[in-house]
Image (cartoon, rainbow, N blue to C red; front, side):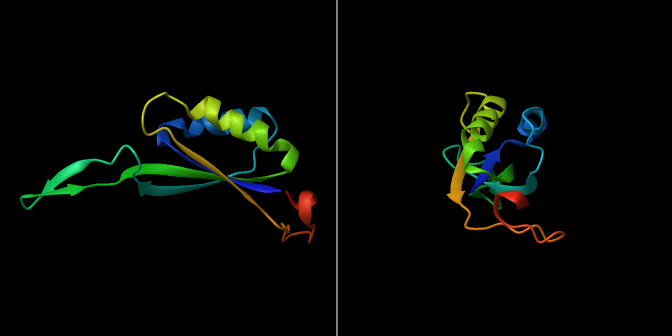
Length: 111
């Protein structure tokens, strides 16, 4: 299993969720975050000083079976890409186990 964490623009959320649902993968968690990368955020002036701000982003997290990783990441890329700086990033990391609390199922069955 792998955990996919995609940092995306808020405006891309509906397209990403619809794309994942269309391929049969509706299970995600969405978290509101702020940050900046190459885009460097929004520079604002506060009491005469320049302050680099943070941009609103969303983190879409899903735990997927190894066989689904390419399908899921490709859907996210396809639906979240505008071609402009600030489209986001996808991080994929291993998951050693998953447990469904309601049933006690473990591993792929819990995903």
